[in-house]
Image (tube, rainbow, N blue to C red; front, top):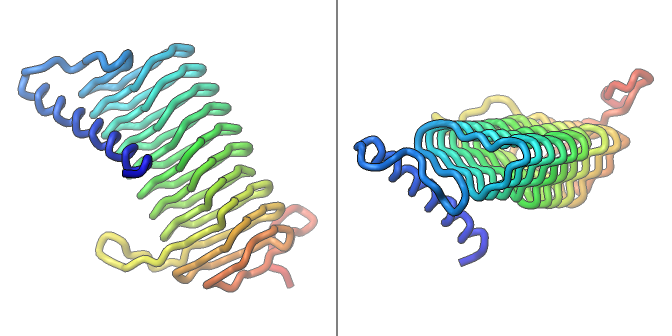
Length: 257
């Protein structure tokens, strides 16, 4: 079993354990709050780690999790609720199913993952591994860095001078790369099969602005509307014909004549 598979298995085991606790608690058999390896584990209710505190894993099932500025924690996980990490904090994996995740300025995390919710990464925050969403928007502020892959299925993705180390992937989401952004590993827009739950009539809009660098291929398995600045540096483009943009005297990107 690979390290990635073991990690996912461990996270799934954690969620199943929390759900089991929920069932038991509803039956009136067990307390709602338990100690967990010097961390915090709850079934119902939000969890708050105060500024500067250090603790282990932080878990709940029904509730949001707030990690204040300068705190240091282990894995952070909820099922129904958001995860918010303040500035200059440190965490391992941040995970939720139904809820967004925000990582504060100059903070560090191993990875971010949600199913339904937006992902927000503030200035100069660092994520060592992957950033993943299924249904949700993604924004990376200036100076933010992701060592792994950034991916979603549905939802707009915006980079403001951020860096991605191992590629940007989506299926139906718009992509906007603003000045100073860099993507190593290329861009992939995956082909989708229309269904009752995944039916998009509009092409994804891909905008690569001035002073953006994309190393590796730009591969489009479905039709997209692609716009590329004449001041951007990109790899080989496959599956789309770009509309070239230039910058006018006011700094606006307009189609190049």
